[in-house]
Image 1 (tube, rainbow, N blue to C red):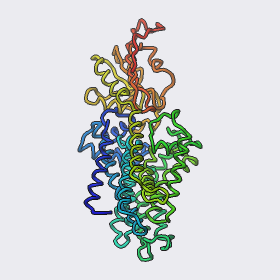
Image 2: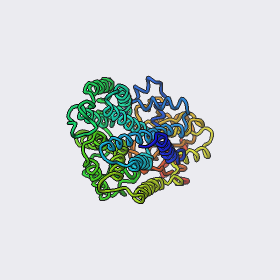
Image 3: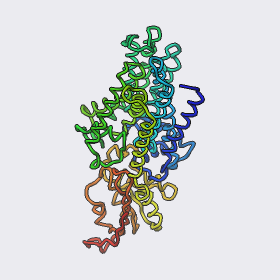
Image 4: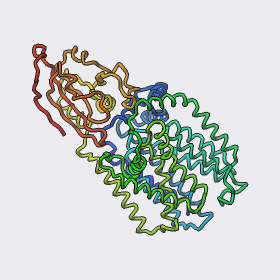
Length: 539
């Protein structure tokens, strides 16, 4: 790679593109279940409570600690909550550029790789990553996926430095251990990434003959004791979480939202990870998913043809390990295969794809091909954004605006669907008191049960005993239903429905936010049947 200043300028430009693409519409979408859960834990809990609450959920605590620090500086607004993930996306692009540079630099020492090809690999991989619709979506969310991706990329770069620069390894191994522990405490899929890294490190230090990699000689091979001590420290650092992990696995096995795997699960998940995760299942094409999966396999084969170089082996292992391991777990225990988790594979696939296109013997990069690839990637991102229909699918934000316009003094507000509780609270925390959640019995853990304490719940009898004449309810037609049948059956003995409005959310699995106004039935008329609904409106 040419002058360092040119590389710094290039990376800065790529980071700016990544961040700007993710800033688009960041404040438009209403906050939803998973993001509200992040806010509920990070902003409404002490440091020690975060640990105990996440232990009762299904995720490790590191992201929530980072988010709590972020909130202390930038506040609790939707933009502030989501900007952490965008910040991590920018750091991811920086790490990806470094990883591409060093993988291709290792290649250039053993074969003729032009400077233009080196630049092309960095630019193409980083732009494809920046334009990926699935990563764009999840790096606009107040969730841990962007942080996990960033840590996976940087940890892999630290590992590559440790493996290829064994003369002064302590710094690189130390950075690798710290970033890997942070990754393991961010998302459980990290175990698959670390497993792949461990295999490659062991292979590089033990099994690889110098003749198979021109960059690893007998004297420059990574020292085994550094590898052993580093992974021993990682295991020791993660051991305290193992008992919690076992209880979380048991909880997931009892009830989880990801459907069981089928013959189409792998190609469908990979297709969604590459192109869009927001398409409803009935609109997804198994044929296209299978075609893309086969083309991906061809890219990996072409990527490995030049030989088992350390950079290529590491990239290949990191690109397929989460997918393969998640499929194995899904087949043997509980289904965990979904496109959002596969963003841990994406950056490494883009490294391989860019190297194949830029330096491969079959596909020689031409400016027209380069431009066509990026135009198509931008078109896919644009179509994914348009599918959200943010102008018309205003969801909870519109429901709250309607409530502000029509609520009267003395009206009660109760959240019916547990998935809406913290979302509604975040949107109204400065206008209304903390809402109440209708007690409908046991709540699934993936609905945020770990932070839905008994003191926020209210029974139908308690609502009736307060003497209020009007009651607003917040419900959802999406997610899984906490009860069966229409909502009015919950209140038909004592309340009559006056108004119902539905507000579509952008993501298909969210359905619509249902805002309903009930009026109390006078005692003398409580036995009257067939009460008439005065008006109904929908969006």
